[in-house]
Amino acid sequence: MGEHTVSSFDEELEHIDRLIRDMGDLSGAMTRASTNALLESDNALAQRVISDDTIMDAKQRELDERAITLIAKRQPMAQDLRSVVGAIRMASDLERIGDLAKNIAKRVGAVGQGATPRSLAHSIDAMASLVLQQVNGVVEHYVRRNPEALVHLRDEDEKIDIQYTSVFRELLTYMMEDPRNITSCTHLLFCAKNLERIGDHVTNIAENAYYVMTGSQLPVQRPKLDETQVTAEAGS
Amino acid sequence: MNMLTDAAVEETLQPLYKPAASKMTGKDVTVHYGEKQALFGVNLEVPEKQVMALIGPSGCGKSTFLRCLNRMNDTIDICRVGGSILLDGEDIYDPRIDVVELRARVGMVFQKPNPFPKSIYENVAYGPRIHGLAWKKSEFDEVVETSLQKAGLFNEVKDRLHEPGTGLSGGQQQRLCIARAIAVSPEVILMDEPCSALDPIATAKVEELIDELRQNYTIVIVTHSMQQAARVSQRTAMFHLGNLVEEGPTEKMFTNPDDKRTQDYITGRFG
Ligand SMILES: Nc1ncnc2c1ncn2[C@@H]1O[C@H](COP(=O)(O)OP(=O)(O)OP(=O)(O)O)[C@@H](O)[C@H]1O
Ligand SMILES: [Mg+2]
Image (cartoon, rainbow over all chains, first blue to last red; front, side, top):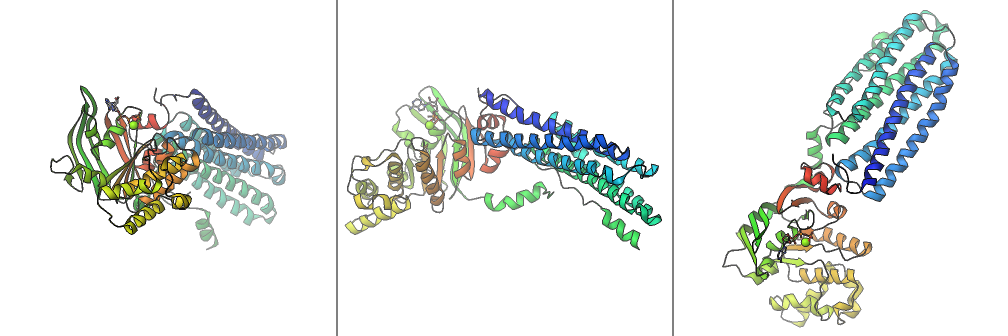
């Protein structure tokens, strides 16, 4: 895309883009750090995630203000309009990812030391890695303007769902084995659920980024399975 | 996240884009001013009872094309028009066509409000008088009132109908010109940058009027304001260097145009 006749218009758009990238990087870092803090019972790291969330919120506010000012001032059209509206939406999903990571971090104390069995820690870690890959991927494809890669990326979300379902099953077994595990397992369950929801926000971001770049919607995705099906099985 | 397929999107948007019958059609329209060619084979359908916006950089031929639609170019000596322009399927450049009658069917509103140096009443009554559309005083009174009503001006001027039209504000003068165009019951109204001399409030009134007028009239409007084109029109045609570059539903033209030149123009990237 060529440059605008008014060059400050380009600078304003670039600034918004930079904020998206910053928020994307931060959301990835927060996701990773919160899971690490959880699995290693690292309270200091958890605290850092909680304070990073303030930065995330500030960046989102800044992006909103810049986007609204740009709309008022420039009345953007076509792909410019899509980028600005898309940026507002993507920022709101990124901000939600930050909230979910913070929520994981806040549970670190409650889950407690050594409460997580090895294999379970491994499953949650694997899930976090998948989620992280998605978060980093979506930001990268957006920055590199690679809409085709987003189609594949969105389909990858299904792997997170599958992983989540298996973590869910595993947690159920621990709770059935020993009711004393229930408190920590419930917290871990929320953590896993948060990771799964981060994946959903990545899907939203992928859809918005695709629309920003191409002007058309990502093709319809098939309905995905969730843990309610597992509950029915487990209860039967 | 609620996802719609392209097909589903098309379907929900269908009512907006309902293909209207074409009221006017330009076929391979070429225009020369002396040696200089201003239009290079333009093909464009103007849908009935919709607003079509013509956009494009200065000098691209918007006004030239607009003037072809009611043979206003005939008034320019050096101007030659080729190809054909159909109104309800009839070629308006056919020698048997009565140009005065044609201009009653296809009226025009110009960039600068140009009321005659006569009373408000006479400005509106003039057309019906020369076209023999009214005979009695009561008939004239009626056509003047309803035209001013439709142009959204009646309440502002009803107590001074016999004062000069030139004494009105710019925005009122433009609406007077629209009333004058409506008075002869045209089928098509052509507007060449009708709001360029108006303030935002007067512009808003004219835009609202355009939106109401499309119930009964086919409107073609030339505008340099992308926002105005986006607000008032259902379809938009983009001209560049005497060619029609792209034509389509306005929503699409302003969110996701196909042609690079349209994109560059509407986003402000033309050099
Ligand atoms: N009466 C005329 N005599 C000679 N050349 C003309 C005449 N009117 C227009 N032209 C030329 O034809 C081309 C198209 O002009 P036109 O007025 O249709 O452009 P436009 O798209 O309406 O531009 P603008 O947005 O500035 O009104 C221009 O190159 C212009 O110089
Ligand atoms: Mg012009």
